[in-house]
Image (cartoon, rainbow over all chains, first blue to last red):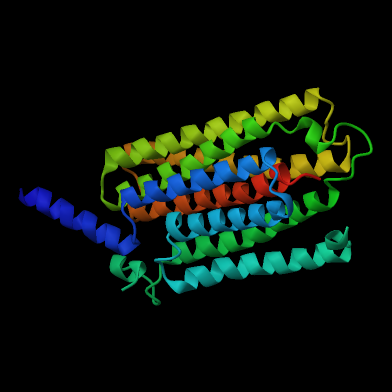
Length: 107
Length: 196
C-alpha cells in the first residue's frame, strides 16, 4: 500500500515535472497521426488554392507538437528553446535568402 | 520550478550541461538539413534524363513509413517516461520497440531506393536524383545511428553499466530520435506531398 502510494506520488510528480502523462503522450500521437492522414488526403482530394498553405500549416503544427511535447521544450528551461530555435531560425533565414538569390520563390 | 532544477544537475547554472550540449547540437543540425532540403527544393525540377518525381514516388508506401517513424516517437517518449519512473523493464521494452520501428523505416527506405534505382533513377542520373538521394540518404543515416544508439543503450542497461543518471541518458537519445522524426515531418511534406 505504502509502495503503491509512493509510486503513484512519484508518477504524479514526474507527470507534473514533465507536464505530460503517458495518456497525454498517446493523445498527442493520435493527433499527429490524424494530421498525417489529412496531409496524405491532399494528394487525392482537390483543396484548390488552400492546398499549399494547408500542407505547410499542418507540417508546422506537427513540428511544433513534437518539439513542444515529445521533446519537452514547452516544459523545460527556456535556454534550451533559445539554443534550438536560434539554430532553426538561422537556418530558415539563411536558406530562404539562398533560395531567393536563385529566384526560387518567383518561379 | 523547472525540470532541471527539480532533478538538480551538477552545474554552476543549474542547467544540465549534457542537455544544453544536445540542444545546441540539434540547433546546428537544423543548418545541416536546411542546406540539404534547400538544395533539393532548388533541383527537384531539374530532370534532364530519368524519371520525374511524380513518376516514381509511391505516396501510400511512404505514408506508412512516415506513420511508423511518427509512432516510434511515441514509443521513445514512453521509454523516457519509464526511465524517469525507474521502471527498468519498461524502459528496455520501449527502447527496443523504438529501435524496431526505426529499423522498419530504414528497411522501407532501402526498398524505396532499390525500386527507384530499378526504375532508372541513379545517384547521377539527374540533379533531382542526386539531391533526393543525398537528402533522404543523410536522414536514413541519422535514423540508423539512432537505432545503433538505442540498441547500445539496451545492451548497456542490461550490464547495468550506465555512467551518470540513467534517465538523462535515455532522454538525450530521445531528443536525438525526436529530431530525426521532425526532420522527416518536413521532408515528407516538401519532398513527397508537394508536387514539382
